[in-house]
Amino acid sequence: MPKPESCRYMKSHEWVCLEGGSAVVGISDHAQHEITEVVYIDLPKVGLKVSQGKPCCVIESVKAAFDFYSPVSGEVVAVNDKLAQDPGLVNRSAQDEGWFFKVKPADPKEADSLMGHPQYQEFLKTPAAHGSH
Amino acid sequence: MGTTTVRRTPIYESHKRLNARLVDFHGWELPIQYEGILKEHLAVRERCGMFDVSHMGQVFVEGKDSLAFLQKVNSNDIGRIGPGRAVYSHLPNEKGGVVDDVIVSCLGPQRYLVVVNAATADKDFAWFTRQAQGMDVKLSNKSDHYGMIAVQGPKALGMLSADYPAVAKMKRFCALELSVFGQPSFITTTGYTGEEGLEFIVPSEIACRLWDDLLAKGRSCGLTPCGLGARDTLRLEAGYLLYGQDIDDDHSTLEAGYGWVVKFDKGEFLGKSVLVGQRDGGLQRRMVGLKLLEKGVPRPGCAVFAGELRLGVLTSATFSPCLQAGIGMGYLEGDVAPGTKLAVELYGRRLAAEAVKMPFFKK
Figure 1 (cartoon, chains in turn brown, yellow):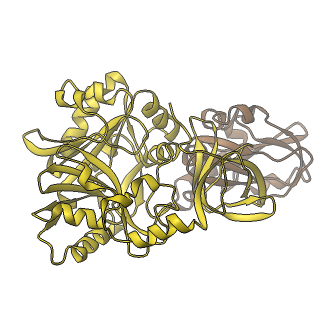
Figure 2 (cartoon, each protein chain N blue to C red; figure 1 turned 90 degrees about the vertical axis):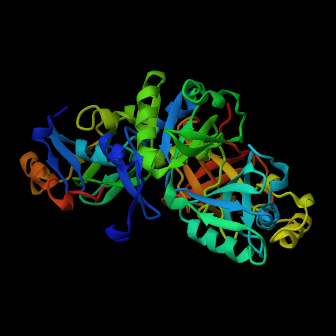
């Protein structure tokens, strides 16, 4: 899995990383901490068309539900089946084993519009980073 | 809510030190969790957990008419508890709704302690004052004078019996007056988790010292500080009601499925005639527990269906850490028996569920 440094980030704390022909997506370590213990993720089905910035699945913690906004547009080609049995994987390894799904991107350049890792780290220091998740 | 109105409990500094995640709960800044709701929940089921419930209120009732007054405002039979005993009760209003749910302890002849909910403490006191008119009772709202710590779980009483030997002999729903750090205090073997345990009611000045002392001594047997998050999942698994969410001024004790709290044979009490009418005439809606048969986490406000018929909404719902499934309760129309197939609407989808008997979880 890609290192956090090579991912791009949404202001709503999703990450995306282009890997070969597909884009892997998940939530940042900051987001998993804010969400607290994940107990269920309603992952999209393979074949679903997702759009950048649009909610496409729901993350459930004990206390609340959170929308996951797709960081890229395209078609879901794989989902992380391990999350069905072990949703806590998201808390333990948000940016590695706790990835959500893979997308065949409609436009590989679309992710360039998102924040890089240094930018995201700066963003986390601002009040705007808190509260959207 | 403005930050200026947020109140802190006497244990606030310890919560900060323990890195608690604090939230505004009915105007009180309280821990929602320390290390995690699931961990805290399981600690209480398997060992013991400790909760700061200092936001709860304490009203003392004294005087010649104290029993007569308490019998008037409670649906449960306060006459059945003698000194040293406690009872869970509802305070019905004149239309059969519930002013609050409380625990009444008998401290001695003509001397009682009523523990009330935080958000309703002022409302309850005003209600008591009104209902006590013409009676020889002295009511004192001492909510600001006391801190309250709940220690809950199978190991709770054993852990405490070294420092508080009297605890070892206490059955459920007992009340004890004692000295803690030289200060007049109370222990009641009550709680809101479905586990064995007790609650300390101590003067605010020593609440933090007691918290720190219990934590230091309890660590070796797994005592875990727990927040409101685990308190909510624990009480829901136990089928306990949350005032303001599951019961309120417009829902009756009978509709809530808590008929055992209403003692019709004890004589007159407020709201009795309405409750008699409900008992004899049947109920339009009643509280039903349900369990999801599919993955997903139901939330309060979710609509519940039987086929295409919308029966009501969930008032409390969550993920049950012990059942590893979504559970919830809500007022449903008609007579929904356990085993009835239902559906819960969640984000536009209907998830299969089944009506179950409460408590959801019992050892």
